[in-house]
Length: 215
Image (tube, rainbow, N blue to C red; front, side, top):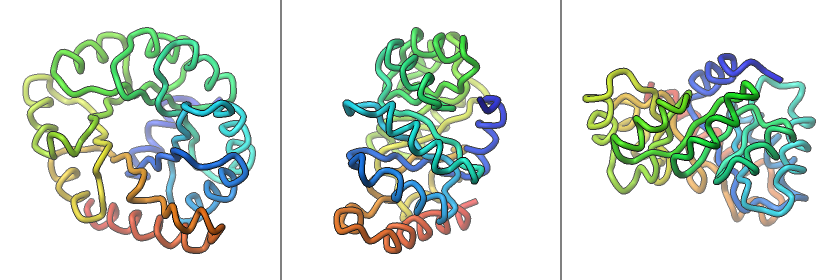
């Protein structure tokens, strides 16, 4: 398994975690390949489906020839964290703060990025051993909330997710984000539905370009 410091460096270097939610099992591999070809360095497969672990393992094998890191999202409890880690996830993202999930990740040397909104949640996550903090949903509070958290808490690495788009991504980086998470803004659902992987890649390339310009 890739060392979690290497995983963190790859996420920060990429600047974006693509959130693959609702992508079918038969499309997950070609979609992931299109994203990797577009320059996306971190892919998050949400663990809210019945075969999420198998999908993570499939994508991990498909992208073994790249430096992309494959993780799991929407991980709500320690049992799910264990399942996706066993499947090969190199990072685990949650929409909330669960010390049990963070501890499970730490036990296996896997990067943990729990979701936070308040200073209390951020401190709880950091005390549990979180590596990164997912500010979610970012659209509710906006870029200014990054400074509101980091002001009293010091140097914290925050990844805003939820409502981040090419139009506002620069604002989040200017506010101090180390990377962003994106789903609908980086995934072309209509192109995926019709199997147009070239269009999927082009849409992702546009988001990656916006991230590069923002930094």
